Length: 122
Image: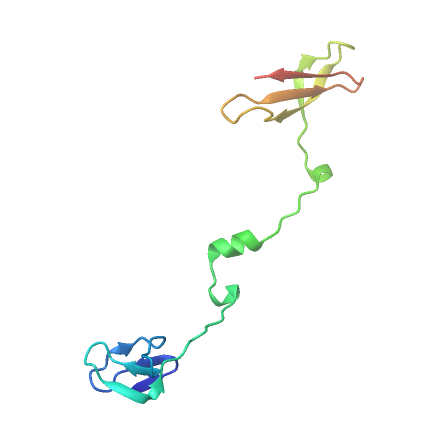
C-alpha cells in the first residue's frame, strides 16, 4: 500500500483504498484484489476549508455590501402638464412607487409646494 497525502493506493493493483474504512483490526483491505497491509491502518481524514479557497462570482456578488442613503436618491420629477387642485399652480413634483402587487400598476404621488398632496393609482 502506498500513501500520497491522504490518498492510499493498493501496491498490488493500484486501486484507491477507502481510507476511512478498516476492519476490526484497523487494517485496510483492498476491495479490488483483497490485499491487506498493517502499515497503513484506517484513519479518519478531516479537511478544513474556508470560503476564499473556492472563489465564486456569485459569492463575490453576495459579499459586496451596497449602502444607499435615501436622501441621496433623486426620485421626484416634475409633471409640467398637471395643475394643483388647491392653488392651481402648474408643474407639480411627483414620485412613482409600487405599493400594490407586482402585477398591478404603480401609484403616482403628487406633492405641491403649497403643501397639497394626492395620489393616483395607475
